[in-house]
Image (tube, rainbow, N blue to C red):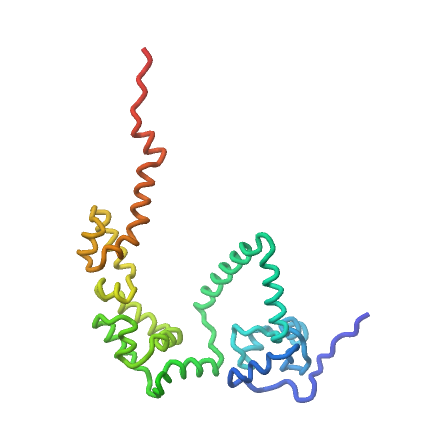
Length: 267
């Protein structure tokens, strides 16, 4: 009979700190085993241990010690072995298709979970902030109103970012950290003229509706482009699948049977 595992923490445990930077976290995960910060014992992975022995879930453990939500509770060596095993498994027949299905399902779950976004680890928020407002040595807060005003004036995202003195990647960092600002950017882009949207590759649903209306009225791509202020190629990329669908419907078996003359009755 196997002796029950001891639940008594080692001396100095449980710990009561939170990781303050990426270096500390990487040092914690490096090596062949990862130490449980609740009892001091080391394992290849912690998920099962903390749940069975300490009654603590992964989310609670990560929140308690400031570990980012997407960081796995396993040692670097274990992660490396799993990656290698996964690559070997991908060579099996049908495995790539199965993994692609799993990837899409996981992506859908992440999108759903993002609607109730958990707070990021404090040091990650600081990193994003430094990367976003530390461009070219800047220390002042990002002027969101000035950026939106530039978009309203017809500038592209890249041009507006340059106008306020930031890189486009810094703007995207702000959008990721501030959903309200991201929504304001989307709404402002949607009010731009189609010509300005096309320059910034930001044509949205309003353009699709306007082009579809002209398409249904029989406008050619060239005439629709002239009316909307964009290039004919811009219209053609969107109208081609519509035109193909019309052609398929026109040559469908039902349509063919309707077009065939009725057989003459036998005399």
